[in-house]
Image 1: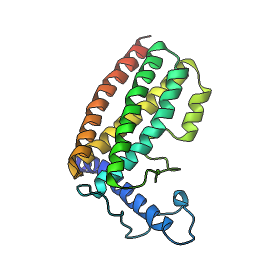
Image 2 (image 1 turned 180 degrees about the horizontal axis):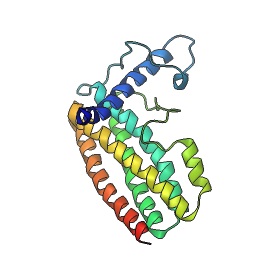
Image 3 (image 1 turned 30 degrees about the vertical axis):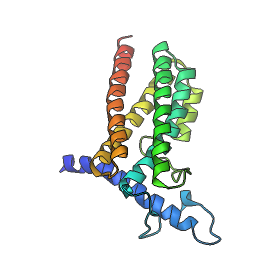
Image 4 (image 1 turned 90 degrees about the vertical axis):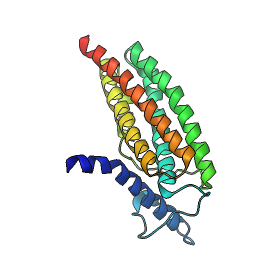
Length: 206
C-alpha cells in the first residue's frame, strides 16, 4: 500500500498544480477582482483554458510547475557558485547553473507552444522541493562547511522532486515533445544525483 501511495505522490502534485492554475486563471478573469492567488484556494471545478492541440492538463501543469521550480533553483545555484565553501561545491553549482538555465529556456519554449501566458501561476508559492525564501536567506548567511551542507541538502531536494514530477509527465502527458523533455530531465537528474553523492561521500571522508 505504501508503495502505491509513493507512486501516486508526484501525480497528486501535478493534479494540485492543475487545480491551482485553473483556479487562479478563473479568478483573475472575474471583472474587478485582483489577482491574489497566493492567498486564496482554487475555485471548485475550475478548468484550464484551451491550449494548442496535442497538450493535456498534465503537460501544461508540469511545464508551469517546472518553470517555477527552475526559477527558484537558479537562485539556489547562484548562491552555491558564489558562496560554496569548497571548490567542489562551487564547481558543481556553476556547472548545474548552466544546465538548469538551458532547461528553463526549453521549458519556456514548450509553454509558448501551448498558447498559455508566460506569467508564473505559482508565484508566491513554496512547492515541494523548492528552496524557500527563508532557506535561501539562511544560505546567504552561512559560510564554509555549514553552507555546503545546507546547499547540498536543498539541491538534492530539488533534484529528487523534479525527477518525480517529470516521471509523472512521462506517464500522463499527451504531447510527445513535452514528454521527451521530461525524459531528458529525468536522465539529467539521475546524473546529478550521482554528482551529489560523490561530493557528499568526499565530505564525509574529510
